[in-house]
Figure 1 (cartoon, one colour):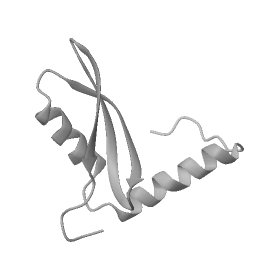
Figure 2 (cartoon, rainbow, N blue to C red):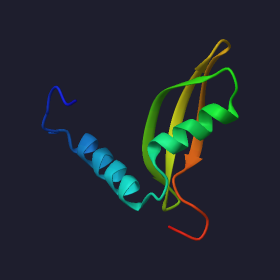
Figure 3 (cartoon, rainbow, N blue to C red):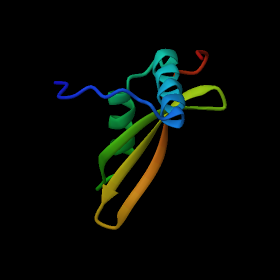
Length: 84
């Protein structure tokens, strides 16, 4: 459910949003699946944030996890081998 739509006037935020859009458009794995993979690989942690981005031209999800011993940020691929 979308509660509010806000125009992005800041050029830095606009550039970041465009990069996130490009990462999602080129992804072959969903953010949900990448988040599940990160949580499964980090027992005792839960996901609190996920941010799509490009890393070396490939889409990745930066997943922030929270556990009893603090925060952890992991990168999960949003592509399968052989795809871009």
